[in-house]
Length: 65
Picture (cartoon, helix red, strand yellow):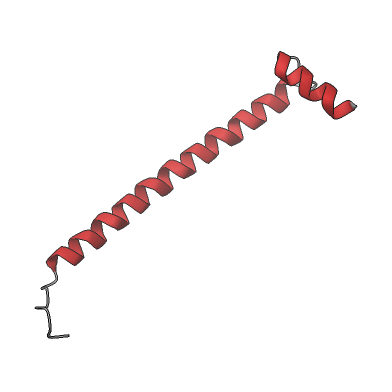
């Protein structure tokens, strides 16, 4: 029942992890958040550029396709 004991300790705030392990996990989480934020910004810019291109294109009248 070791996994259950660890789960219970985590729920109670008493983990078997060292402070260094916790700091490493937090640093990785921060890095992931930064990368996700950068990816979100790039994705948003790509959508804006595409939208501008679509709006600049002339529309073809119906029935001429």
